[in-house]
Length: 316
Image 1 (cartoon, rainbow, N blue to C red):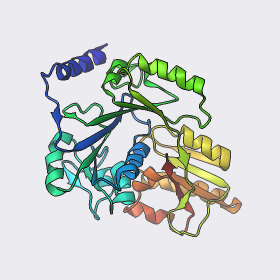
Image 2 (image 1 turned 135 degrees about the horizontal axis):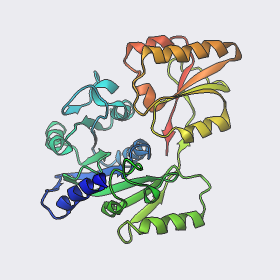
Image 3 (image 1 turned 90 degrees about the horizontal axis):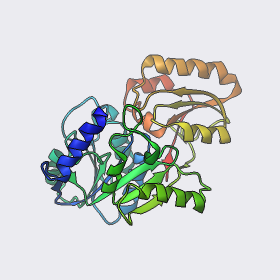
Image 4 (image 1 turned 90 degrees about the vertical axis):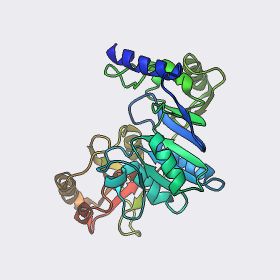
């Protein structure tokens, strides 16, 4: 009740213009959610980059969650997950020749710096900015996980909601993520009806499922993933990936760390010990793409020299 009161008053102050929301000088798309983590923001941001990169000069703007730095940074060749955060570093590694990647705790403060440093920018993708109400984006995209939709959830700490369900009415577009590939029309109608209780009338609702790409070797590019796998994840919701691995490989062990976990030497030694125990059977170690970002550029990568360490790619 206390959490609901605080978030209600904050949103009311913005709705009544006691707190000001600023329109940007540039086209902007916000991607966010009502729940805490794990709704698939990163794949959606990457989808938008691929969608608009041919016709727009794009900059992604994130907070840089769990980075070891502060303030405004535009990603460069000397940056890594510790300086800009794992998700922004993933964008930079994949698209740095085509887009700009910026991080800052205060997105409103960051906008003029982006436009000054990268004046050709004509589209800013605001990563995880649904609650950042100082900015009024051109388009507000709200994500909700098919397996734990916001309309069935409760506010923190009883549930996972950052703010009340009724605040879905700020969304211009709603995407239901992590849907089964065989999602039927009846299910879609039920979800649409449930969402319509909270969203604005005629809001566009889309449905998305994750298609896992072929695992890519981190070291020796000629390596192929073995049939037996040790899986390592430090993401908010690993279940879809675990289900995929179970269907396509023999999962020997799953190391499940908390979201954005920075691996220690001890963590990796434990994984290597299991790898060596199973090695005669021929296995590979599988990380997620985001988790590999927190190892790249660190001395911890030396631990995996000579080992078939592979990461998976999440695609829309």
